[in-house]
Length: 394
Image 1: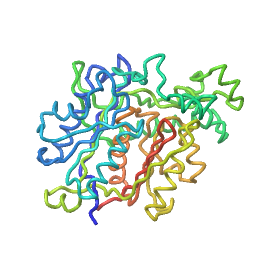
Image 2: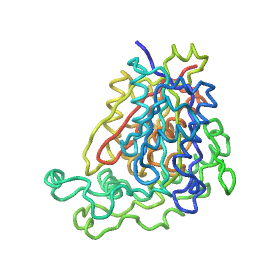
Image 3: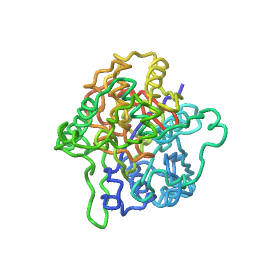
Image 4: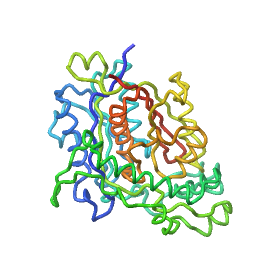
């Protein structure tokens, strides 16, 4: 049976998703095009050999409409004979792109494929694809959930309440994320994965949202971000402890991985970095919404025939501190193995790019630490989650 391996992985530095952000002046098509050029250039492959380009993007409207992935490939200057598509599984879009790409390689449908993602939240703000007054759900959802679904921030509060997570716990987790990310930058641990971006203001080389001096005391001064009297009445268990400081920020960024089989890699003289070992995707309660990482972890481990103790490193997307802390409680994973170079609370969460950003960081961390197995999982709006297990290759 054929396998699927990652032979190259790159990402941009992550900018703040605001008008003053370091990457706000870069069109999202160009941001992804830059990443694709870096990916192909570092691998040395002939771009004409790529069978498909699968990209994730969440808010597919405005400058991110019209199949952004296709135009990024063309903007990169690559052959127009190579197809591309853009997919949306919310925050897990580019992790799902990896699954589709790897499954295509394993099945024999592809020999060489790019999985990637982009989001420019400064230029296309989150929710831009749902204009005011629009109902994206329809009458069937209203009938099934008569009290209504809730925004992600409320889900994060409900998770904190259900797992008895204190404000101090969440702030401590957030501070650790910043400290780890700052150490990783200082120690050069991101050097192999970053593709610096040239802008009119200069070259962007580091992740803009990392705050090295963040402490629990600093974070304790922030106000709750989602306080709402209507939700207080509906959910009296909420104590309003989720803040901007213990949540991921809005960001701009792009990332990409090159996937092939071991056989094709040998034929093309490419060196595999990691094998895509097992995959899972799950659905869960759309009210809690962000807890799918728990059953997804269980499912992917079962499919892989592995136990939690076999996993050397974890990447669990830090959409909110409460999500990762609830996952830690339920799985019993060692916190020292989770997001070892910081997570989205510090590095940022450019929605469609985050799946392959996490994977790029994870592949490099595996190499740096000599890890055999690593697990990545991502919570997604609507009560979804992806999970992937990677196997290190010496």
